[in-house]
Image 1 (cartoon, rainbow, N blue to C red):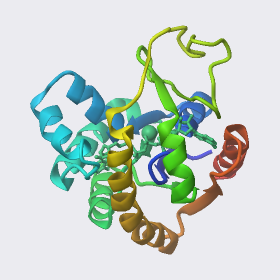
Image 2: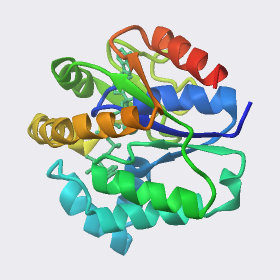
Image 3: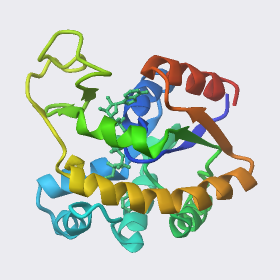
Image 4: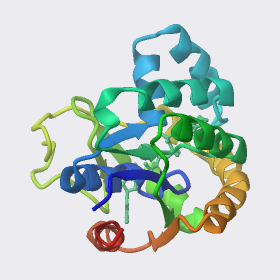
Length: 219
Ligand code: AP5
Ligand code: MG
């Protein structure tokens, strides 16, 4: 199998983070979530984190020059030699163009794009039920994905969980609108390049993963 250099796309709450956890376990590639990078920078109150926070709190996109710079720096590291998976990047055509130049300059061209498709109305409900392990970041849902032992993280055994600030109903609405607008041109862009694989994200988590695993195993 060739090195997997992947993009995982989907609207907010489509299940990018949830599926990424599984993909990384099976295929041993580096998971790069721009959202996670921003949240970690906000937690540490770095200059970049403080700048990003103003946008994230409103459900807006962080400016492209900031995000593109982060991705370029991350993809330049040696640990992505054996493959990477971008989660939540690119999110608009400008970022897709930036990724074309970054990845070709680094000789790490994208070889597949997995698009998790879910109706936006379903997503609003999903986001309100999400909770996350404070220790390792594993994602759960109060109806669809509970830890095996109540109150204990399956991955790290931690007991503290939190809800994301941008999962508040007011922010979710704008986040969804912003992302819906940009999603179609991005889907078309990768479709034209022959890189796009769309999976139905309105199925049980394991079923969605089965489809993704099948696609990746055949690449
Ligand atoms: P980011 O953190 O990437 O947020 P997002 O795109 O809004 O996506 P989410 O992380 O909310 O959802 P997900 O698809 O990972 O779903 P999950 O697996 O958690 O970005 C946050 C912010 O950072 C952005 O709004 C923006 O401001 C900024 N940003 C990030 N990238 C940027 C970029 N490239 N450019 C500019 N700004 C950027 O699942 C959601 C819930 O559903 C969970 O509770 C889960 O358990 C449950 N679930 C998952 N799958 C299923 C299923 N099949 N059935 C039922 N429930 C399910
Ligand atoms: Mg996510």
